[in-house]
Image (cartoon, rainbow, N blue to C red; front, side, top):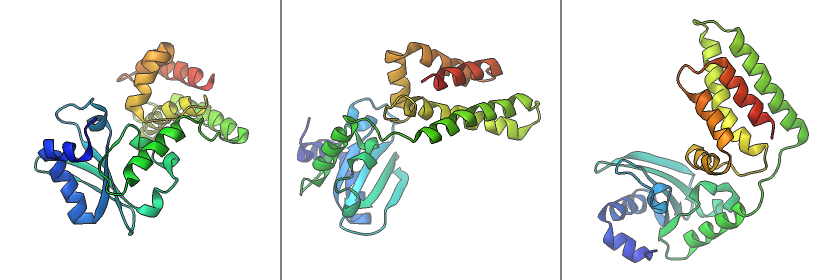
Length: 217
């Protein structure tokens, strides 16, 4: 892995984006994460960054900069101290500007947090989520071709089922890209169920099959 200095010196786009966070937001530390840090980026991939500054409100800076898309979260120092569990999306990140070592420590804290199981939900909440899934499925079934609310609930249910699959199994939910990659490798039956239910114009039977599989955890 390149050092911070080498990364900035060898990548003018990265250097330009880091400079944006320094000059516009007063960031003293910048962590590059996501596909650009993990070596899985496509040419059109966003540049995901976390900028840390001494103080100020947390904010977001998402825009085109010289033809590339910057998607940066800006946070004050106090938000990252011993807070690795709150920044799991930064996993595998690289501190590309880190004069005080704060970025590297955050990445280490995230790695440590991921090594521990997530905080579980109370059983009553788990049961409430299971009941919600069946209620949503019933509402979708009753909807007709012109029932926009039923269509909305279909999307809502399908969206929530992915995270719920991991929550019910005591695993960290790391977003759709990482989750589908993990399911493909570790739980191909669940991956197939999601593929069938998420396909355009999937039948209600495919959604019900997915609900049953998710709730079996």
